[in-house]
Image 1 (tube, rainbow, N blue to C red):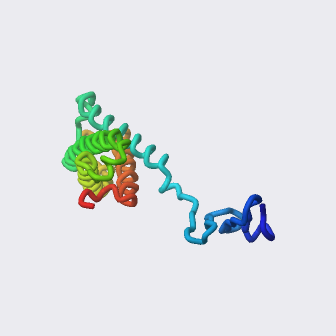
Image 2: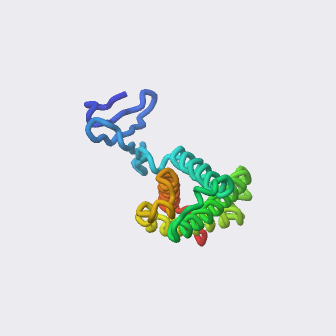
Image 3: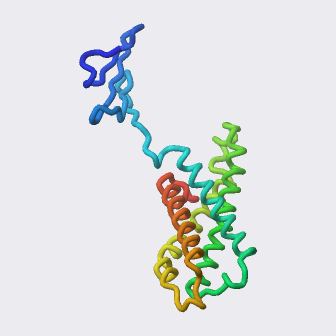
Length: 194
C-alpha cells in the first residue's frame, strides 16, 4: 500500500515491513528500488527487449534468404548493372550467406543452452563463437554496402543500371542488416573473442 503521497512512489507491504520505492518521471514509473536498497531495477528500453532481437533476427533471415533467392530467380533484364552495383550485389550475397550461417549456429547453440551445467563449463562454446564471428564479418561488410548506397541510387544509363524496385530492395536489405548489426554490437554479439 502507498506510504505517504503517491507522487513520492513509496510503498510498504501489508504483511510485513518491506518497502519499495518507484522512481517516476512525469508520473510514469521508470525504475524501482528494492527493499534492502541494494539494487535499482529499470524499465527496459526497446533496444533491450528480447522481442526486438527476435524480430530483427527474423527480418535478417528473411532478407538473407530473399537475397540468395534473387540470385537464382532474377531474369536476364534484371542483370543489367554497372560495376558498383555488381560488386555490392556480390558483397550483399556474401553477407546473406554469413547471416544465415550466424543464425543457424546461434540456433544450434540455443538448442544446447538448456543444459545449464554444460553451458557453464563450456562457455561460450564453438557454435556461439562461429555465430558471433559470422555476424562480425557480415556487420563489417554492411559498412561497405552502406557506403555504396549513394552510388547504387545514382546508377548510370538506364540500360546499364538496376530498376528502381531493385534499388529499393537493396536499400531495404541494407537497412535491415545495419539495424541488426547495431543491435548485436550493443548487446555484445559481435565479439567472438570475449
